[in-house]
Image (cartoon, rainbow, N blue to C red; front, top):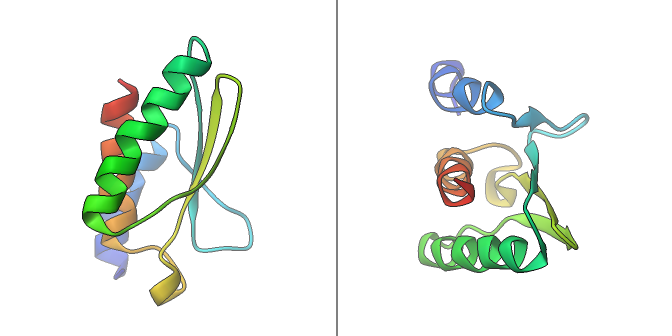
Length: 94
């Protein structure tokens, strides 16, 4: 991503709870839901979009918490796909 792309795509995500991952060109967010079913449902809805866009998150789930890291391995850093998926995840977590 160019600096201008980064400003346009990543800065709004940082204002919405995403953070840069130390030592990597990646973003992270922890989503906390009411219970395991809500967390798993979020992961399922996200998985449908991730598969459709062929862009898959690094994530883990413990009970009602889902930790997500987004980066694009093909380009060794953040890409527009990461921003797109992050925005979709924020929408799905609603």
